[in-house]
Image (cartoon, rainbow, N blue to C red; front, top):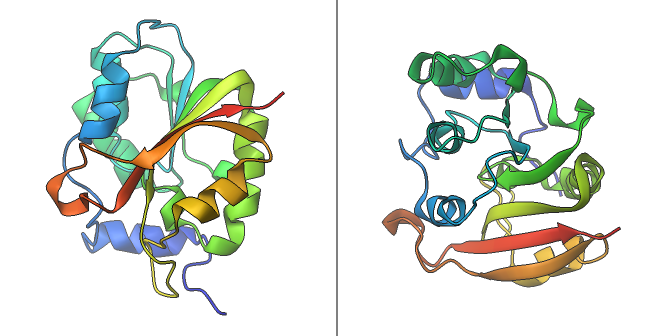
Length: 198
C-alpha cells in the first residue's frame, strides 16, 4: 500500500503557506487543558513535538511551566508562537526533524503529530519516544480513533492497533475514548497516558 506524505518539510511548509491547517483549532484542546490543570510540578521538562501553532506550549508557559520545549520543522508555526509569547526562550524552540532529536524529557505531549506521520513511521515513532523519555517518563495526549486510510493526514487507527504498537515499551495507564473532545472530534479521539517501561 502506497501512503501519501513521506514526512516532507516542503509538504508542511506548503500547507501553512496555503493556510490548509484544518487541524488548527486556534486554542488548546480541552482534554489536554484538563490534563495540564492537574499538573503541579512546574519544573517538569516537557516536549511538544510537531507542535504546530503550539497553543499547548503557550498555555503551559502562562501557567508557570518554564521548561517547555517545542519542536516543529516548519518555521511559520514556530514564528507564530514567538509572536504570541515573545519571552519564550529560543533555545527551547527546536526547528528540526523529531527523529533527529537527542534529549530527555519527563513528559512528551502528543497532539496531531502521530496522525500526521506516514504510518510506516509508527514503529520508529514509538521507539524514539521511548528513547527520549526519562525513566518512568510519560507520553500523554490524543490519538485519532477512526479507520486507517490511504489518504491523509490525518491517518487514522484503532485502540487495538495502538495497544499492539505501544505495549511492548510502555505501560498503558490510560487508553480510552476522550470524554471532553471538541465538538468536531467527539467520538474520534482516544485520550492516553503511556508510561515508559524501564
